[in-house]
Length: 222
Ligand SMILES: [Zn+2]
Image (cartoon, rainbow, N blue to C red; front, side, top):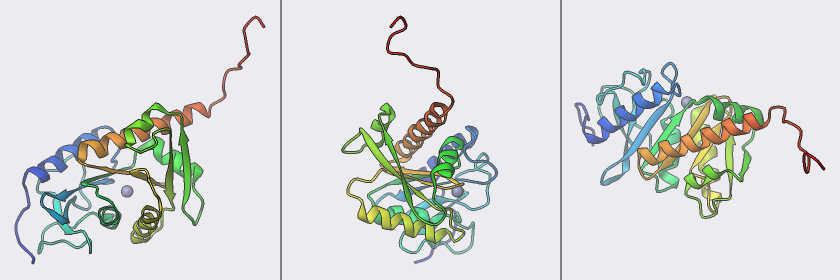
């Protein structure tokens, strides 16, 4: 049933607070990026940041409650949900995630664009990095990160992700969109944000490591 009026509450305040902090890091340029949380006690509802708002100026009224199954607002009138709500819906429908963070952070976007294939989902194998432990995988020594094409129809991105998540046995709680950004999820906004941070840092390392290395010898006097 639809309801009217603002949805400002503790979850809305938290969404706005995290949005402003991620904007301050330069990860949500323009009006890009979006965050959501699953509604407390309502598994099929989520709060998501509104479309077209600067995330640096977001307040608790700039959020929209949506039905997870349809991605449609549960309110009449008011702000529109993020245009990328279908990505959030795909995650809530196929995982136990309680929060989703999507940003356009530069290193993850650069790596995604470099590795991506034009019209199919591919995977970036990550190994050795200590920060992989931040993903909470059963095997923290490696992860295969899905890279989805930046389809102009956003629901296709959500469909590709849902297809991957439904097939993988221990999927990473994150994925990349070519020429676009990174999305991670977790048991709350802090954990989803931490996972974005870990993967952004790993992607930064990948780019640094791809630079011309210094020469290596078995022993300097060998
Ligand atoms: Zn985006």
